[in-house]
Image (cartoon, rainbow over all chains, first blue to last red; front, side, top):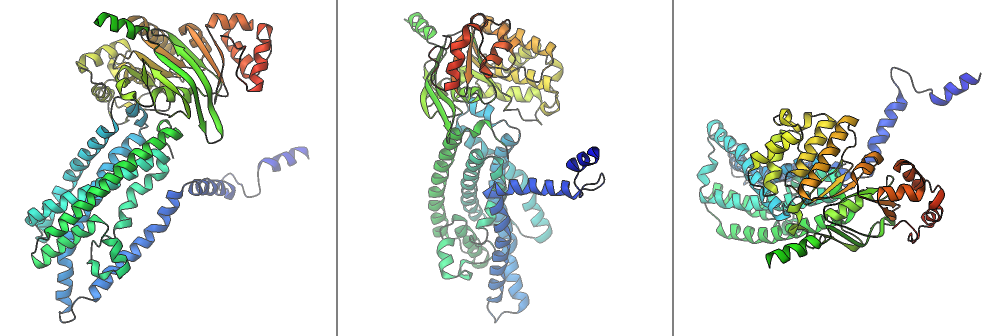
Length: 287
Length: 274
C-alpha cells in the first residue's frame, strides 16, 4: 500500500512513458515564463501582423487611387515599375542594418563581447568596424541581385546614377543608426532583445512609404512619415523613375535628418553601454 | 630621469581597490571592500558562490561600474581611464568564450592585433609551444574539448604578455593533470614576467600552491586577508578547504572564534585576519 502511494506521488495520471501531457505542459510553461519575462518578445508578436496589415492596406489604397483614366494594365505597369526599385532600395536599408547587427550578434552568440570589451578595442572602433562589415555584407548580397534584376526584368538599378549614390548614402546612414540602437539594446538587455534586430526595420516599413507615395497616408500619419529619412529616399526614387526628376531637395532633407538620427543613435548606444556596465550585463550575455 | 620614473611606476600597487561597493537593486554584491595588491604577486580571491568574486573582478576590469568606491590598476582609474591600461592587462573567465567558427590561430591572431602586438605569428607559435597547442592551431575553437578550450583561453589571456592578469576559475572543468600543468605555466609566467595575478578559484589546492596571499569574501565583504600559511595557523586547520568551510558555515574553531562571530553580524570584520 505504501509503495502504491509513493508511486502516485511521483507520477501523475497525465503521465505515461510514451506521451505525457504533464511534460508538454512543463515545456509550455517554460516558454511562457520566457515570454512573460521579455517585453521585446511580446512586442515582436504583436507588431508583425500589424505591420503586414498596414503596409498592404496602404498599397491597396495607392493602387485604387491611381488615375481612373488609365487602363487597369497601365495602372499596374505604373505601380510595378517602381516596385522592383523600391524592393532593391528597401534591401539596402534592411540588409545594411542586418549586416551591422549580425556582425555584432556574432560576438554575443559566441560570448565574445566580454573579451572585446576587456581588450584595448574602443567602442568607437567597434562601431566603425561594424559599419565596414555592413558595407561588405551588403556588397556581397546586393551586387549579384542587381545584375540578376537586369537579366530577368531589364531593371538596371545602376542606371539611376547620381540618384543611386544619394539614395544609398541616406539609406545606409539610417540602417547604421537603427543598427546602433538595437546593438545597444542587446548589450543592455541580452539576447531577449535580439528579435528587435531582425524586425525593427519592418516597424518603419509602412511609414517610410516604400511601396506607395506619402500622399496615400492619412494627413496625421504623413507628419510622422516625413520625420523618417527613408521616406525622402523612396519619394525621390519615385520622382526619378516616374518623372525622371532628381529631387536634390529631398536628398538634402534626408541627409540632415540622418545626421540628427545618427547622432542620437550614437548617444543612445553609449548610454545603453554605460547602463550595461552598471547592471553587469557585459559579462553575462544570454537570453 | 627615465629610470626614476620607471622606479616610481614599479612602486605603484598593481591593483588598488578603495571602499568599493556594488549594489544590484537592493542586493549588495560587493560591500565596501578595500585592498591593495603589489606588483609581481599572486593573490587568490576566495569565497562561496555569490560571495562577490566575479563582480569584484568585473569592476577591476572596468566591465562593471561600481556603485561607490574606486579601482586603480597600475595607477589608472578603471572607471574613467581604463583604455590607458587595458593593453597591459588581460583576463580569462568562464563567462566569456571565443568565436566558435574561427580556428584557434585566427582567434589568437585577432586578439594579438587588438592588443597591438608585433610579430604576431612568432608570439602565437611561442604560446602554442608553451601551452601544447600546436596540434590545435588550425582547428575550429568551437570543436575543442573543455580542457583544450581552457588552454586556448589561457593563450588568449597571455597573448599580450600582460603585466596584470585576472583569472576567474582558470582550471574549472579540467582534469587534475591538465590543471596541474596550467598552474605550473602560470607560476612560470609570473616569475618570467614579474606579472601580477589575481585569481578567483574554488580549488583550494590551487590557491594554496599558487597564491602568496588570499582575500576571502563572504556576502560581498572581506572576511579574511592573509597568506595561506597564516590562514591555516589562525584557524588551526591542516587544509585551506577546512578553513573555507569554517568561514562559509560560520564554524568556530581555535583562534578563529572571534572572527566567525563577526561574519554573522554582517558588520565590518574588524578582527578578521589582516
